[in-house]
Image (cartoon, rainbow, N blue to C red; front, top):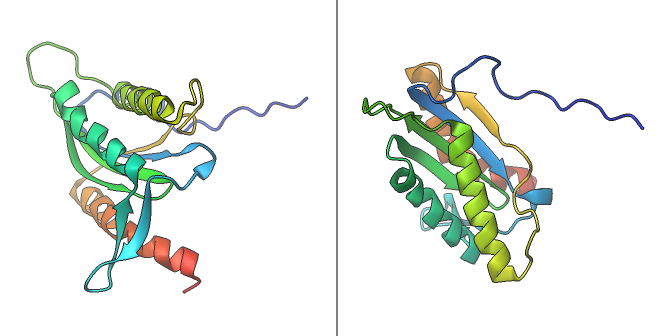
Length: 164
């Protein structure tokens, strides 16, 4: 059997706990569309309408800064089968080590999977895909571009799935 090596998606020798902003994407296992539905609002622009699980996930997103006070959630969107986060890590200067993006996302995935499996009576099932995509935000323009990408993700979803 040929087992190809997984593609490395993280920067080698980069300290993911250092101060800065990070763009993170998590996908549900098998891209299961259970987090939201993209629907038009009054002006016709599409927005995610969160499902029960999506609302649950949103609650855990909002708990991240409580769990990790040096982490700020700058922006996020909960799509049907994935989440985009724009987070910032700011060392508080207390000498306590800042969490890494991996620590934050591992906690988030563990907590949400545990609770969702409890609700669905599916103990031990994977809810999220293995790993996650991250991008180190390099400058103000990169930050603004990612902010725009997150804002416009529902529109791109409609365009992709409506054939327009």
